[in-house]
Length: 105
Image (cartoon, rainbow, N blue to C red; front, side, top):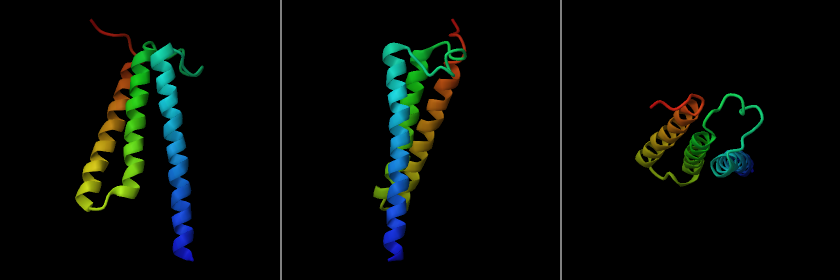
């Protein structure tokens, strides 16, 4: 019984994380295709398209991390996938940070 409850809460956490990942991805797609952003970001971000690409890469890192919870059968695969997820999240953050500054020539 306890194992089933724990499995249930783990699945709830995964579903909530996947929903957050989907919201980030939708926000990125909207920023890339239309240039529109959330009202709190409109004053700070000068390159919305780059911000959107950062959001999409960040969301793919989140999705990689979420999926590792269920399919990483070996420790090496889990480590490699974890490093990949962390690298994608970091790259997305760097792109979002660069989107707040004007492009250099």
